[in-house]
Amino acid sequence: MSLPDKASHPCSPLAVLTSFRRKESLPLIRDRVWRIETGIVRTLTWNEQGHVTTFGLWGRGDIVGQCLTQIQPYQLECLTSVVANDVPLGSHGGYWQDALLKHLWRSEELLRIIHQPSVAERLIQLLYWLAQRFGKSVPQGYLLEPLLTHQQLAEIISAGRVTVTRLLAALENQGQLVRPSRVAGKGPSFSASRRAILLPHQPYSSLQAD
Image (cartoon, rainbow, N blue to C red; front, side, top):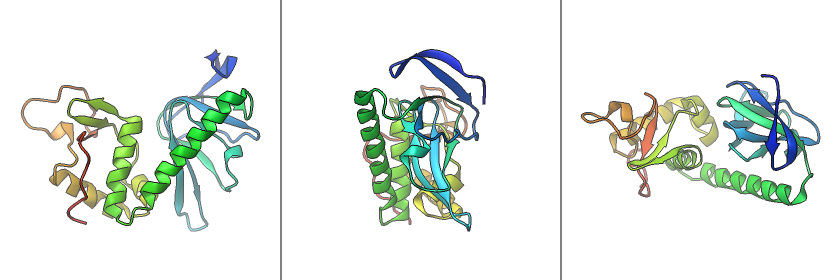
């Protein structure tokens, strides 16, 4: 975690911004929340057997914090480098009403995905949700840089890591997922890392091999 900086912000004329590295955790502060300025945060818990439950994936403009849950233990894990500022919950009433509604809506979106009956359907819907929220729209579709490991994807959709790896390979074989680094011939008209994936714009179909 780096030293905080002061910057302008709609919630405060002198908001204090704090930087966190990937894999660090945002501190849990009573009666305050973190507003994410840049980066992506995962909220999660785990049981005595070490089974992880993911509650949400949050990005720019989202709020996260201990006062938004009654679950223990609870962690705010940085999936990327993150810049955030902590602000008192309930200040600037109009802003917080909007922020809390968005928090609820995002939670419902993920809840709908993880309750799909098919593991394959859960995975492909999760990939599109991630791409539309955190990816980039390019002429060929949605470009998504790697945010989650196969194990983390598996934890979110209640599947095994091996199953997720197999389903990702099946998606690629069926053309529903493209890795730009493996495209033969002329390269894509955008820059992407070696592990990035590309999802077509058109609505996806169900995975044919479950």
